[in-house]
Image 1 (cartoon, rainbow, N blue to C red):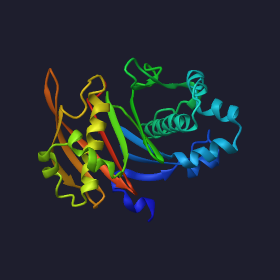
Image 2: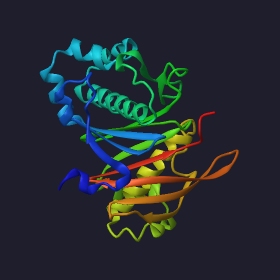
Image 3: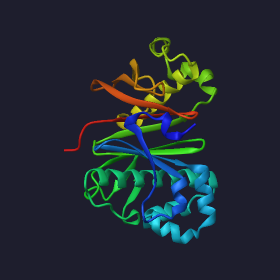
Image 4: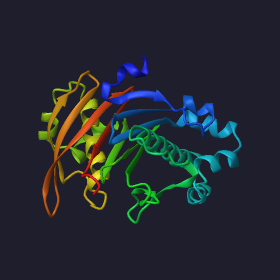
Length: 266
């Protein structure tokens, strides 16, 4: 199936073309742009492994990573772990390139800035004064995904359609939520929609909260322009307030991807 045919119009897909990267990366990653405030990118981690093996390690490290990121990268010993970590950074930096392009800002060199974890492990663009954007990263099986937004917070999650979700459904969803999503007749897909939506919300506005699923409730779901995309409305209850948040979801191949944003930067 053609990749672009599986995506709604709000998720236009194209190849990575940044001049800093070798043409070999063109077959590794893709991006979709939702609007001038948010962009997101996805990377094929299996193809990325081939890229890492075929090119000089020091050369691409200096192109893709800041000094601080290179130090973190060197600390990984497992191929799977450093491929996931690097793939998430490549996707996020490409998404930032696209956001800068959409808003007519100068694209910074990838090695001139970092995406480093804050005190609770959330990825943050540094230096913040020059890059006042939020970032979120996720990965599952073969793919990594990232989004960058002008909103003060954002969340993205990608989930492989794994049968284990059937076994775990009572841990992350209620009978009422499964009833709300029953219009999605494939049970595995409907469970994955609930899972990814709650994960994206967690990363967006609940990253400092210990509870993941109990404070988020699915209220409604609406089909999009195709049978592969949806919009979900959820309520999030914290100690201080209750708010509604909208999550955009899409199915691509055997994956579900969810994204959402919080408030705007001042």
